[in-house]
Image 1: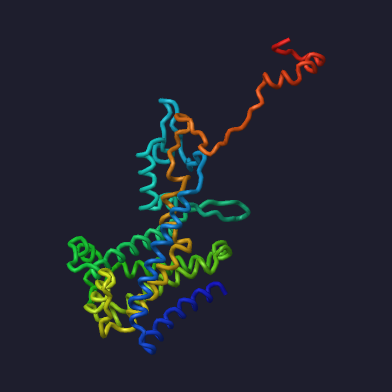
Image 2: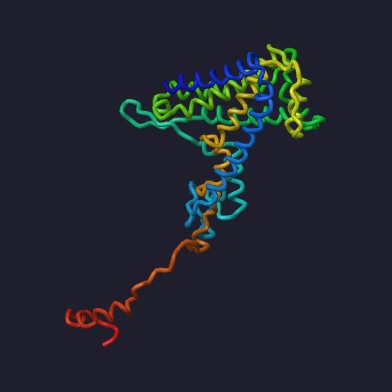
Length: 329
């Protein structure tokens, strides 16, 4: 039911865009109004979530430590797993964000013949890495629609992405990799019982949504041709705040654009916000220097401490009768 709900929700979104453009001729709504609203929700929602997380109190250091802490000079420290300096934290965060280092070392556990066995789980790491990097490259490639002159680095990326020289137009490898990675992540949630048990509709919906975006983009590039000049004219109009609706773009483009707008608006409300949250995780962005520096909770309020002298003044006579030594007679 969770899978079907998410699947039909994406189908319904595509049909809404189709009906709105093909039947009701609402090109301005789907080409201008909705994109602006989606971008505003994305930016404001992203800022709100980051500021809310940033204002959360972290009164003590709680870095995740997986290696030897900085200690005595003759004990070798693991400077990446257990960094004690800002540079070590930067390296650890970079490896986590760019290469998913902790996911690479992830293990799977299962029972075999009554024994708990640990095994490798590299396919999830590979699919996650392939998905995120392919999505990033595709995102960068699309900047050519928003710039008057395409920068050389975008042309270089496009050349490397299509270096196999397959088909006309040339086949982009990232298109295939993205579709394959999203499909694997979906099938993993379906066929692995433990993952399926904890998966919600909110986990399937973004997968179907991204799959719909990628599929509609592939259809436009290789099968259902669209007016590229008109697409760039629309994109340039949105960026320069002088929107225009060109003729002959095609309904498939508006479906593609509407799904992208849905993803942008949904992004700050979903688990996809881990893109910003990973940088604010106190278990990752803190140096473990508790032995070298004393950390005092800045939110501690003054508390009256009952000293031993006050305690003895209160109970001196009773302490004498009980034979307990006192400092003052």
